[in-house]
Image 1 (cartoon, rainbow, N blue to C red):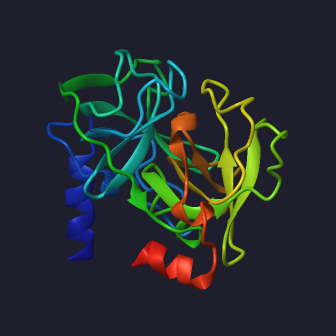
Image 2 (image 1 turned 120 degrees about the vertical axis):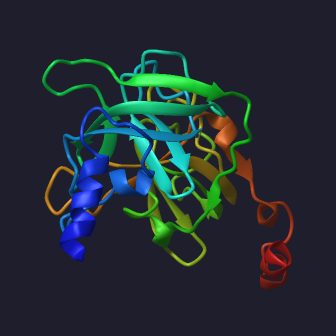
Length: 238
């Protein structure tokens, strides 16, 4: 039965793809977090969590109900909120599963914008949730802070952020955004960002990152304004 299921999945992933597969299938990994279907040609449909905010050639991120994935080398101007169909090859770089151009010929993905202006809502997750499951999605982290923020230090690359329980996450500032070079905000924050990864060594199951699309992805948390006592925390989550 298991062998038959694998044959069915493989038949869904041969080129050219006749219909869209779930992004969860594209992101199927082995025990080393390496994509099982690396190099295969697929068609997926999803909502763009980012457009050209992270650079005109990508990466950008799309989601369907089963997960999110990064994509590169898109030939048309996709914007956040576009619902798109992408036919591309499954690629892999430093732990990040990607939809990319043909690794042999360089042929770019085929991208069709099916609709625009759709609402984009991030998943509210915690720092310990960062991992393979959420890679490629848009996440929001509530009540976190930057320990190095002092009103002077600016974003330059990768920076640690923490929650109230001492969990530490990594935020990466892409040079194509207005985040790089901006002063790191102080106090308790809610941070939204695309969830990526940069892990150069097998197993590729560590070093997940949060990548904000702009400074608009930072907002002050209500707990930072007045009451940061336990009663204030309870009120925040009531």
